[in-house]
Length: 87
Image (cartoon, rainbow, N blue to C red; front, side, top):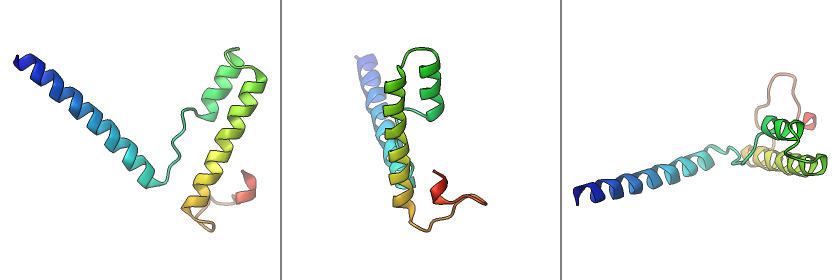
C-alpha cells in the first residue's frame, strides 16, 4: 500500500514540477516551441520532412520568434550590430 502512495506522490510532484517549469519559461518571455531551427534542418536533411513541410514549419517558428521579440519590447536590447530587420 505504501508503494502505491509513494508512486502517486511522485507522479503528482513530477506533474507539478513540469507545470511550474512551463510557467517560469513563459514568465521569462521565451518562446515555447516544439522545434529549433537546427532540429528542423536535420529532419529535412534526413528526409523525415519534405521541403514544403520544412518551409511551413520554419515560417511558423520565425513568426513565433518575432512575436516573442515584440513581447519583450519594441526597442529592447539587441546583440551588437544586430537590428530587428536582420531576422
